[in-house]
Amino acid sequence: MPKDFRYPDKPTSSTLDFISGLKSNYLAQAKINEWRILMFFENKKPPEIFTRHATTLKKALKQELDKEILDTLKEFNPTELTIIDGGYIGRRGKHKPSIVLFDIMKKDSKWVTHWQYEKRDTEIKHIFKQYFEKSPCIFLPEESRIDFGAFYEKQKTNPKDGLVEGIVVKELSSTLIGGRKESVDNPCWFKAKW
Image 1 (cartoon, helix red, strand yellow):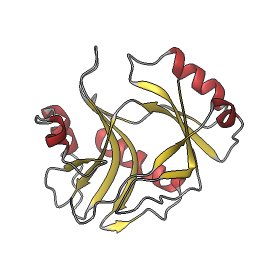
Image 2 (cartoon, rainbow, N blue to C red):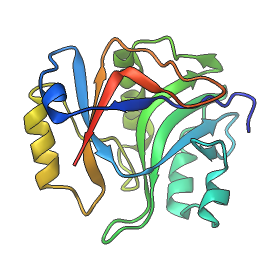
Image 3 (cartoon, rainbow, N blue to C red):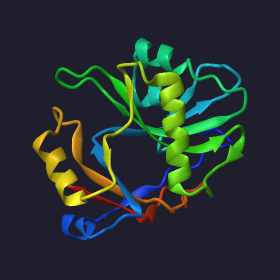
Image 4 (cartoon, rainbow, N blue to C red):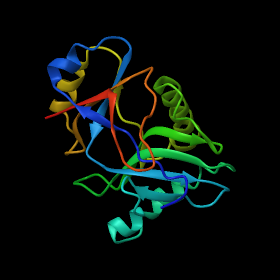
């Protein structure tokens, strides 16, 4: 386990009725059926990628990561340690292996876990736009800031070959609370799966 490893927060299981009642201080995202990963970028080296259980993704997959994904991830080459929370999606139906970006935990060797989610979300979108937007194998989850019940139904009727399994709703002012010992449910994040 790398010395800077920190377990990612998880959304709390909830119901669609509860999520539908949430208002404007939240952001909903498609809940992707993925393998949760943390990507460590530093000193223009290839990224180190770990599962949320601190095992290397290569070891967990029992094979090398897709070359197109690795080559694309190498485009992001900060000189200081940056840790991005995301998910790995293996080959499914028509879909090639890909990576979805969720959050940023460390930027330029400084923890940003105390930043509100809205600021971290802006930063991960900036990284995506600057380095990965043209790539077919790196993406951001679809999102909505209004009518979470309708967003849930939209995702359910178009589950994208099993890639989507529900929605996650995050309070925009929430911070990360996970630690070095375990992954915890963030009480400001909620998920509803079908």
